[in-house]
Length: 218
Image (cartoon, rainbow, N blue to C red; front, side, top):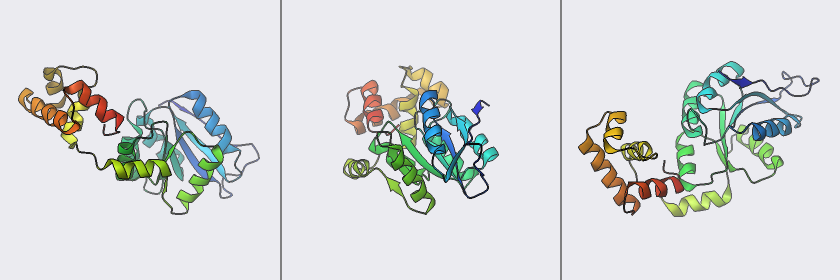
């Protein structure tokens, strides 16, 4: 497992009540900058950094953070999937999604995964630090504009199997390829694709994939 150790200033005593933070961000420069800025907060210490979604739970079980800041678009496993796994493996660790992709469907899925907050990466670090404190105080913190968009967008119309099939079709895979990957019959795959195309109001599977991704349904 590749993980970069991140500690605060040498004089910081992590036993003196500092909030322990885990960062999951695939862009090294962004991850390092966030760690540096959060470590400047007197009551916070970044205790682990990971660059992939499948590293989140192992790192959290080792470092025992109070809160994990997860991006969504991570290699290995999405931040949304990692959030659900982390909440099951380490219930004491809160989850705050911090992402570039402010899509209503992502917000709904994050809440379903047990996240306590959802922020878009266009605000100052002071707002992020404040959000961390609010989440640890028991509040739910959601970007106001995104919350309004999610309410107007309505729920995800796709079933889990329809999402699975569309996800498998992202790279232009054939029906046979999708069927083999998901252990389904080709007829069943065609039925799921047809249903997904109808629900997204599109003309073909690639348009359905694009619409679903734009809405954060995948």
